Structures are given as C-alpha cells and as structure tokens.
Length: 334
Image (cartoon, rainbow, N blue to C red; front, top):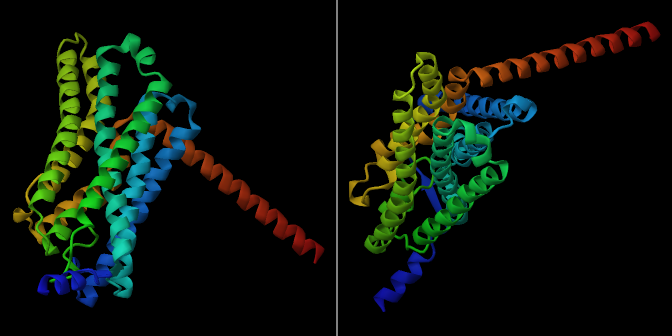
C-alpha cells in the first residue's frame, strides 16, 4: 500500500527548478549581460560563417560543407540552454515544466552527440585531403558528404531518443531542484529517487561505444595525417597541412575533453560546481570559439568574411544614400 502511494506521489511531479546560478541580484544582472553578449556573439559569428560559405563559390567544397554543419550546431547548442538561463537571470523564473525539461535535454543531447560524430567525419575529410590529395574530390564526392552529414544527424537523433527515454521514465520525488542551469543527464540522475544503476550502465555503454568509435576515427585519421606531414619534404607544405588541420584539432581537443568529463563517468562522481563549469566550456564557450578559431587560422575563410563584410557595407551605404535621396525629394516636394 505504501509503495502504491509513493508511486502516485512520484507521478505528480510536473515541473523542475533550475538552481544552477547565483541568487544575488547584482551578480545575476552581470551574468545576464555576460551571457547575453556571449550568446549574441556566438550566433552572429556562426551565421557569418554560414553566409560566407553559402555565398562564396570558392568555399563550396567538402571541408566547408562540414564546417557549415558545425556552425549550425554551434547556433543550436547555446540556443537550447542559454535562452532559458537568460530568462531565469532576468525574470527570476527558474521553473521549467516536466515536458519543457524533457525537450531541452533531448535537443541538447541531440546537438552534442551530432557534433561529436561530425568532428569525426571532419577528421576523416582532413585525412583524405592530406593523405590522398589527388583523389580527394573523387573520394569526398558531394553525395558521400551529404550521406555522412545526414548520418551524423540521424545517429545523434536516435542517441538522444535513447538517453531521453532512459532519464524521463525515472521517478522524481525527494527534490525537483536541478543543480544546473539547464536539464542534463548527470543532475537529473542525481535527483531521481528510482534505482539508476542499470540505466547508468546503459548510458555509459552507449556513450562509451559511440563516443569512443568517433574518437578512434579521429585519432587514427590524425595519426595518418601526422605521418604524412612528417614525410613531406617542403617546410611550406608541412606548414600548410598543419594550418589546415590545426583549427579542427583545437576544436576536437576542447570539445572531446569537456564532454568526456561530463558524460563518460558514474553519477557517484557528480559534482554540481565542477559540472557547471565544464558544461559551460562545451555548451557556451566552444560554440563561441569555433568561428573565431576557423576564421583566424584559415586564409580562405578570412578572405570570404572580408568579401561578405564588404558586400554588407556596400549594401548599407546604398540603402543610406537611397534614404537620404528619398528624404531630400520629400523635403523638396514639401
């Protein structure tokens, strides 16, 4: 009888409270401004990369096709989490519905998982470009690139479906306070009053298999790339190869390191303060840094960005002249 009553109480949880940020009003406002500027800079930077790739025909190749997918993911990743965090900071509305929490976790895991597999595909692309340059365009055909990109999104989707279903079929009774600024797997496991061992085992196994397979592809690709670079006779060729791969390798190190620290471990080691910092690294900082890293280290992207900025300035100047002309005509008619 007691067990039945408990299960009824467990089923009445309809909302969660996100308590991962400071309650001090002065700190809360500063955090709001900081995260708002970071989010706007992230969206602006990645949209600029997308516009540069789509408008410049010289960037219509496999490398930049995958970079465009990465920029799209880097827009979605903070959008899923930061907008709710900004609402909580500005309006002090920390409550999120059960359904809202479920969808937030689903989309976040979907984006993070897709990015892990996309980085592996990008590593393979760099391997083909450096180790088989004469066959690059034949091997990395647009059809194959489209299949690889779609594959990363599909795998990320089903991976997220599995993880979300495992988390949101648990019962929550002792507390509905999520010690994070968004709904994520570790804090949700921490507040569940259901036995979580078997689900943790499944999550660790799936994350381990899929994550390690992506990491192995990336690692093997870069081993072959490094060997190919060392065999190059020209220092100019070595520098060009390193500069081509340096941006991607930097992103891989940041993203893999932080996500592994968060997800590939038992919930007994969960530390709210540590996890909050780590999750901000791959959920907020990495999407902001990606367009900077790629644009600063890539001459083609920098050239495309200059052309985009020049076109925007020209369009704004024309619009300004047109507005001034219309105002002058209106003044003369008046």
